[in-house]
Structure formats: C-alpha cells, structure tokens
Image (cartoon, rainbow, N blue to C red; front, side, top):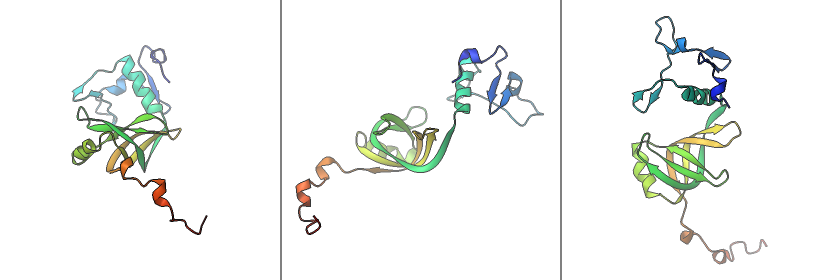
Length: 160
C-alpha cells in the first residue's frame, strides 16, 4: 500500500509500470489521455493524499463476474450514488450494492431482511466481494414461514 512518503516531490505515480507525472494531468492536445478528478459534481485538485488513494486503487487487482451476494440488507441511502449494504455472513463485511431508481423502493421494503442480490459483482484478488451492481433483489422467507423439522416427518419414510 502506498503512503504519502511513496509519492515524491514531483507527485509521480507508478501505475501499471508507467510513471504518471503532473504534466500528464494537464489538457494536452497532443495527448489522448486526460485525467480529471471529481468530488461528487465538483472538480477537485490532486493532493498527495488523493494521489496515494488513486495509486492504491489503480494498483489493486480485482475482477468482476456475474453472481450473487446473500446477507442482511442494511442502510439504504439516496446520498451520492443510491445504494444499500448487504452484510454477507462469510466475510462479515458490508458489501456495497449499487442500485438504479427502479429498485430503490424494493430495497427499502426488504430493509433488515435476509436477501440475495444478483448482478455484476466486483471481487478483490483474494475472492472477497467488494461491491455489486444490482439487477435483482430476492428476499428469503421469514423464519416463521419456514417448516419445522417435525413437519418433515414421513417425507423420507423408507429411506432411513
């Protein structure tokens, strides 16, 4: 992980083996690469702290695949990019679930319940999920709706 000391006085970042210097942050008609930083809807300057954060993000290996995340739906928010968190029981970490307008009411309806969310999942190199772009939310039944083990008596008759 990069630290502020890793960024030299000229603010040179090494991203994918290439040095990125302040000159490359300027609009240059001879260059096809333009890098701009935005904080919400406002442009922001490149500070040493933001450069370190950008280097850590860009150098981190991750991958994406269609999949699902199961857990308790928590914290639905409309601030910034609307999303909610699902606390996944294996990693016991909040997984950010990005949603569009069509799913916001459904997410609020399942607040506090165990759900499965389906979509494009972004994973860290170790396989732990980071976030998901949600395409579908499926609630699990409440505990009261599940069968009791005594209700299963006779189903496997002759197999025991």
